[in-house]
Every structure is written in structure tokens, then in C-alpha cells.
Image (cartoon, rainbow, N blue to C red):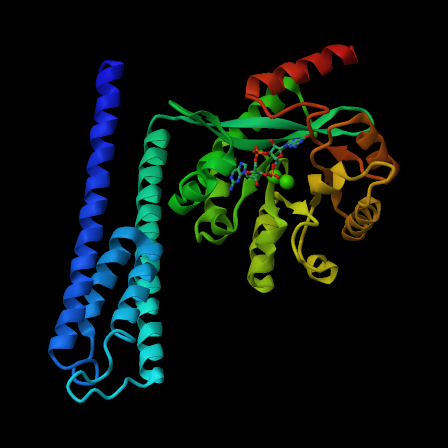
Amino acid sequence: MGRFAERLSVKVVGSTLERDASVAVALIAVQLVAAFALTWALGGTAHVPPHWFYFPILFAALRFGVIGGVTTALMAAMLAGPLVPADVVSRTPQPLSDWSVRSAFFVAIGVALPTMMRLGTSTIQETRRRSRSEDDIQRGLDRNEFVLHYQPIVSLRSGRIVGAEALLRWQHPTRGLLTPDAFIDDVERLGSVAGWVIAEAATAAARLRRDRDLHQFTVSVNVSAQNLAQPDFVAQIRTALRAAQLAPQHLCIELTETTLVDDLESIGARLQVLRSLGTRVSIDDFGTGHSTLSYVRQLPIDVIKIDQSFVRDLGPEGRSVAIVDSVAGLARDLDAVCVAEGVETEDQREALLGRGIQFGQGYLFARPGPIGELEQMLARLDTADR
Ligand code: C2E
Ligand code: CA
Ligand code: CA
């Protein structure tokens, strides 16, 4: 379409909307006058409850939202109040209380209707968005668009890679490479990727360990509260480990601390089952939840991951030193390993080492990337060793 035609079409649409609005305003005015005339003709508000005024208020609220609803409600209140003296026939004045209660009622309708409409349609919109997104995810799953990226976990002292965290990515055909915050909630509602993530990560870890003769290497996967609650979750892990031929101690299940707020007994029992399988259990984002130390002490935990917000704040004037110290102390008490997340600078690495933290991951060492990047990094370190 040419530019002129485009402009013309916008103008036509614009003027149609404008015309519609003036027609609506005229209709509201006519309805108000009609309601006033009817109430007057029938003897005033003392004889007829002025229900006629609801029509213009409802129409204005639907057409123009709260502003239209309230404006029309106030006009209706004036017309059904001071301008219609209570009893036209007997000419008795209208009590002020009657008028003010009626006005409040009109205004309440003018506000409530558009508000309820908005809430109703936003629920419908959210339901539509979810269903579109779930269809999109299902299509992505069918076309193998989901991939795992790996971020190495290293010894802070030597730089040696001791493991990697598998992080979910979606190679979306139109939106590009997406990180989990863009889709994980919808994926979790479908409940369909945890089994795949574990199987994929276990297979990659088993291959890396075989090819590169890595004795220590452990792969970590993120697991949500919903995943943990699935009745067949443990069976999925067992199947994945068997299929990949990975020894269970080389798989670490990461749970965010906020997952732990639920019922301690059932979480503890599930973690215990995972542990009895031989897999390791890690508490992710430690320090961001509200769990108390005594609470965490009762859980079977192998790894505590210090949240990146504390690592960021570790500089000489940082306020996180005491927190990092207490997490390190807790890890020692529990016989657990501490991993610092989000290590971005050499200063942070040194500060963490100074506080007795041995392991870390972060952009200082590597960003999460495809398995090939992890392999290249392992190969580079191998060569450096020789
Ligand atoms: P997380 O488990 O805390 O993962 C660490 C996040 O920090 C990752 O974000 C990683 O890319 C990012 N990161 C790593 N190093 C640095 C650094 O030095 N600086 C900064 N600023 N960030 C760093 P990502 O990949 O976007 O993942 C976000 C979250 O999504 C993860 O947080 C995890 O909770 C969740 N997630 C990832 N994969 C899965 C999955 O397979 N299943 C489930 N349920 N959740 C997943
Ligand atoms: Ca994690
Ligand atoms: Ca984390």
C-alpha cells in the first residue's frame, strides 16, 4: 500500500472511531434526558425509584471505562437529585440522605463495572497467552528446539573444571536464543522437560567422563518444586542414569532455596530418596529464601550454592562478608561443599578463596555455552597440563 493510501486508511479508521465516540456521547445524553423526563412524568423519585438512570451509566462505563462511568453517574446523580425534587406531585422536597445514598450507588456502578470488565478480560487474555505459549512450547519440543548449555564449575584455586551446570535454552525460530526466565514457568506447567534435561545432561556427562578420563566431573541440573513432587521423578532419574551409564554420584540435583519453604518433612523425605539413589543434592541461590539454619541443618545436602547477589557485594566495602562466612560455616557443619555463583572478577575470586570457599562458577571462568565449548575448554586445560 502506498504511503498516501496508508495515511488515508488511518484517517478513515481514526474518524470512524471519533464518529463512534460522538454517537455514543449523544446516546448517553439522550438516555439521561429520557431517564430524567420519565422520572419527572411519573411523579418524581419518591414515586418511582430512578432505575432508568442505570442505562446511561452502564453504557458509558462499558464504552468509556471508569472516567465515562463516573462522569455519567455524577450527571445522573444531579438529574435524579436536586433537579428532580422528590415528589413532583406533592412538591415535598427530597431528603438529602436519599439523594446522597443514590449518588454513591450510581458512582459505585460507574466504577465497578469497568473494573470488573477489565479484570475479566485480563484473565481471558492471560489464559489465551498461556495457551498460545503452551502450543509454542509443544511445537518447540516436537522440533527439538530446546538445548542445554553448560557452565563450568571450577576450583577457585587452580581453575580446574570439576563439573558443569546444565542450563536450559530455547532456540526459538523467530525470537532467537531464549533463557529460562522467558519460558520456564510455562514449561513447568506442561511438566514435560525435567526428564529430558536430566537424561540429556547425564548422557553428556557420561560421554565427557569417558572421552576425557575425568574422574571428578559432576553435572548439575536444576529441578523445580513441581518436578520434585512428581511421583515418577525418582524413577525418571534412575532410568536416565541407567541409559547414560553414569554413576549416580556424578549427577547433582539443584533445588532453589525458595523450594524448601514447603512442608519440611515431605521435602526431606524426597531428598533422602534422591540421596539413597546416590545422586548429590545441592541447595541453589542460598541466602535468598527464608529458611532458618536449623531448618536447613535437618536436610540431607551435599552442596550449597551461594547466591550471586552476595558474591557481587563481596568487595572491600561489601556487606556480604558476614553472610558468606556464615554460609561457609554452615557448609562445614553439614559436611557439604560450597560453590559461589556469579563470580565475575578476579577480586571476587580472591575474596571467596580468602573466606574458605573452594569452588565457583561465573563469567570470570566461562559463560554458559553449548557442550562443544565446554569440551574445547577441557581440551585447552588438558593441553596446558602437559
Ligand atoms: P540458576 O540455577 O541460579 O543459574 C545461574 C544463572 O546465572 C544462569 O542464568 C547463568 O547463566 C547465570 N550466570 C552464570 N554466571 C554468571 C555471572 O558471572 N554473572 C551473572 N550475572 N550471571 C551468571 P540462566 O541460564 O538464565 O538461568 C536462570 C535460571 O533458570 C537458573 O538460575 C535456574 O533457576 C533456571 N533454570 C535453568 N535451567 C533450568 C532447567 O532445566 N529447569 C528448571 N526448572 N530451571 C532451570
Ligand atoms: Ca542452578
Ligand atoms: Ca543459582
